[in-house]
Length: 62
Image (cartoon, rainbow, N blue to C red):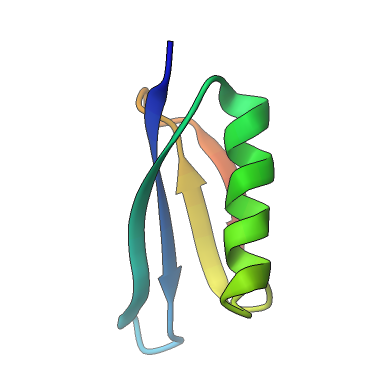
């Protein structure tokens, strides 16, 4: 069953550059999809986080 995950990217000032929800079957797939979204939008080196529906932190970069 698909679950909704949240990917957020921030500027150093705290301004949100991206605040996007996406669906995945599990945490591993969500982590992979999140990394792909970051690369597509060239945000992989920005501060970001990807969280699961239960609040688990799947990706984090500062």
